[in-house]
Length: 60
Image (cartoon, rainbow, N blue to C red; front, side):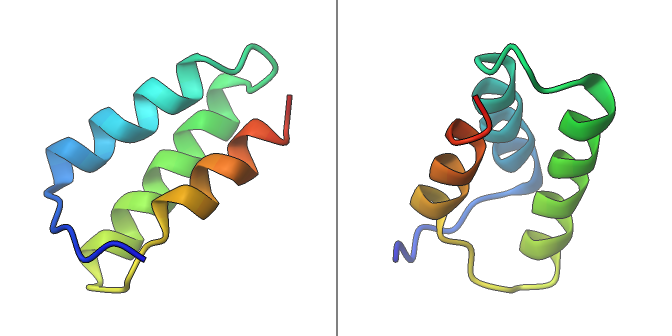
């Protein structure tokens, strides 16, 4: 797991770039996933970005 510190803007940019590559994810789902990611980061919880990307890609 990475110890890279990321800010809210970077988290939002990361989530948007990953989600926009997935054609089958609707706007509501994308919005929910972005909110969840920002909440996790804002709470100081560790985030495994590799796992998050894999989960999104398996939706395709």
